[in-house]
Length: 332
Image (cartoon, rainbow, N blue to C red):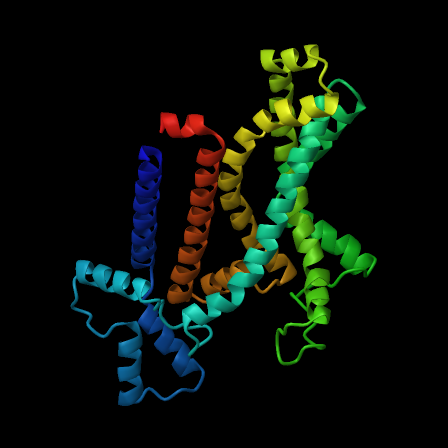
């Protein structure tokens, strides 16, 4: 029980710190969100009437004399009520709606690609570790080389080869907009279009992250195979497949499970650039657009959602790790 209480406390404090930083960072940046919105509104030909000025004050906070503490409490109140403000770039769209439309694309793409990369890396690493000293060891340097290459570089190479030169896959977008003029819909043809457009972005994530899982699992497998309980299992005459799976892989995979949640943060960070390369309609592209347009409300919302998503994934994996490895609960 103490383990779970400590985990809840730790992630609660981390969430509080993340939301607090999310509130403070825009305050430290140059520029006034309200003035930026007014300037853009006027440049687009809008008339700044008293009624419009009153609406802007309501959207961005009309009390300029409020203390930083009052603004902080008001920000927490808005976050807890699900009000993340109005986007300047996509006015008058609420930030919550924009993020709600973009989040499924990123979660679906990044989540599935990260899980696929993890499973392939763990399975491949276990196999390479079991066959240590043979030709399969040559797989490790090639996969490690791919991991050292930046996300955007792999994405550009894939676009150049498979989209521009061969024409096998689309260059941009999350689905065929010409076939679905009314937007996303629930149909097998639309799902096929999403998979077709998301193949290269997902392949980018898999190629960039699978090398670490392969190397880590292979090394842990080699270390585990030298343990006494594995030697005892082999001496008892157990089948090699049972020794490899039940005794070796089951224990060697524990550190990788703990590292999976940590890696999600790096995968999400890399997906920001990757989505921009493929013009994929996810959180990464939304955040990039917000930074370009000095859209502080949208930036805050995107940062908050990314932070909460990574924290939730870490918390979930911590709970799973504590369940499958009782030693963690006893030491926690």
